[in-house]
Length: 244
Image 1 (cartoon, helix red, strand yellow):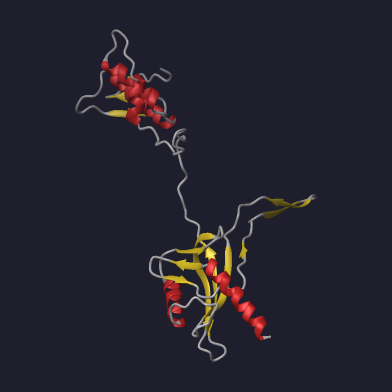
Image 2 (image 1 turned 45 degrees about the vertical axis):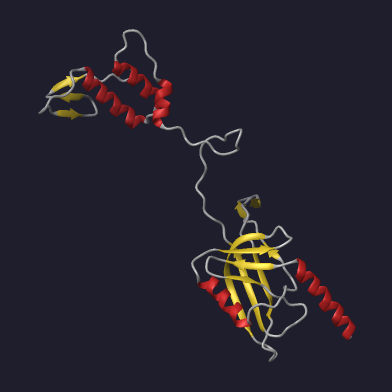
């Protein structure tokens, strides 16, 4: 029996030397001195079920849920050969409590595995069992997913990075054309028209402004009246061109 325990402890000690589990945040960090007996990650996919009369239930494809896992083990108060000695048991507990109650996201890392994820502590139990001074714990972790704004713009072929959206003035420079006899107003008007997309309301206002300018503009004291039927300046009708 003693040889079996020695072999078991030796095997655990070898595993501990090649694998580490750590949890850290901006305010604290813990490297677990004894590996848990099991490390299982759980994740759900949020499919939905809809019922259609006369046809029955249909499954609607959903997106992935958040990964969760529970670490359970103990923080040793004794000098075990399979344990990586470090802090006192309740010092580990205090560090985990700091992360649980803090306002920063934690990072779980398991060496020699692809498991590395931002997370939050969703549950935490600890206590003593056998009078050895060892502190046993169960730690529930839930993946934290950062909210990111949707990316815009095309991708640069050379770098693989997103291009910045083109500015209005850059578009203006590309769209400036000059023809013999053009006025500065015509040149700018064409460039603006090619560079800006107007919705119906904006286009209607633009037509009104253009009509006022083409018919003599405004003078101090002028009164403008706009109805659904016409545009008046000082009680005189101003023709509004619809499709010019």
